[in-house]
View 1: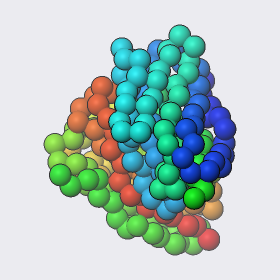
View 2: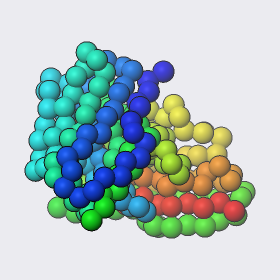
View 3: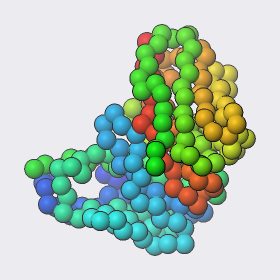
View 4: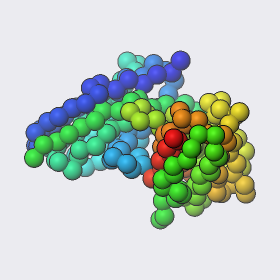
Amino acid sequence: KQEVTQIPAALSVPEGENLVLNCSFTDSAIYNLQWFRQDPGKGLTSLLLIQSSQREQTSGRLNASLDKSSGRSTLYIAASQPGDSATYLCAFSGNTGKLIFGQGTTLQVKP
Amino acid sequence: EAGVAQSPRYKIIEKRQSVAFWCNPISGHATLYWYQQILGQGPKLLIQFQNNGVVDDSQLPKDRFSAERLKGVDSTLKIQPAKLEDSAVYLCASSLTDAAYEQYFGPGTRLTVT
């Protein structure tokens, strides 16, 4: 059974800290890995997509890495801001495109 | 570019009633997905369409859930009859073609079954 685990489940940090969110998956035959942000009561916003041939992707203060051999991905957020407070979900897809999601990490950044 | 549109945004029904959700994907996107997200969990795929054909409906409870994508554009997801455990957010997503492309999500429909 394909599973995705995200650690920690919740995280509270002061503004300005650099932080790392972890995602592990059981299926090494992934096609893509995608990180999403979800604000309360809202849909999912795609943050970064890493294709299986890539090792990392960067967008602004966000950097995501992928290590297929160990079944791990990390999302690094630099200089966190209160506006970064949300739930962060990682998901991988096989060759059909179906996304398998983790349960998410809920982040609170305190001013 | 307009995003994925969904309606209604919220729906409250009693158990055993029926309900339908509508999704309009991003223009030109061939693949459409319906996911169910129960509170506190990650989304789970219910059904995937490629144009108007079904690619994966292995986790769709077919005794009560149905979905269609006529003309390969808009899609409707129906629940009949609803159960208490169907209370969730129903998310629609679309992507350009196959698994190589990002999925873009709509705002979701929050269903409460009482």
